[in-house]
Length: 112
Length: 141
Image (cartoon, rainbow over all chains, first blue to last red; front, side, top):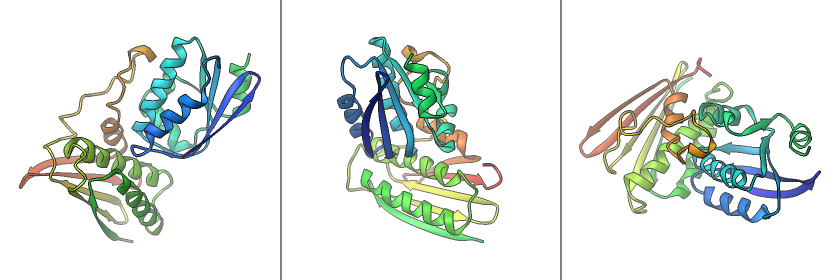
């Protein structure tokens, strides 16, 4: 799992690559917490290069989403593959986290 | 088309790689429908992590077994472990998938994903072992 960080239109874009599972979810959590600065008010996770996520990763997403909500920061995900989207849908996470098809659409939406 | 694959794993999280590799290989050679490789990996990871962290309380010196039986209609999975008794059909609460962000409990989703993605699950406790049998039919995405 690797995270690369970029900023566009005041949106922090963290692109996650590889796999998030029970063996590395803690590492994912630490990496995200390290990447998000305290004054970031718009955060986007790009899952375009993510091949796999399980409940261990969902737990981290939920914690980050809560943290950002407390700070009144916007949070969204984009570019989920079909199997990853299915995991979010079964878990009902698509109802509490905004999910966009493409990075451009997501930046446009939360960058306003 | 029919193939059986057995894995004997130690109770360590680094064994997940072996599970993923085995599922990739079996799914490819048995021509599973799209999406099934991901679902089977997820199911085995969720259950495997449970066995390691809860069933054996992270004791790295134990072992558990996974047998995968793929034929033209379905994949049958059997997991055997000697950890604490755990029946995923009755011992795991229904997760809350409706409430808002603030009220969502953290965790509890793994077993729910397993039950939702697979077609049949049956559990028995025999000779101090948890034996879980799972069926995933190929025509069911």
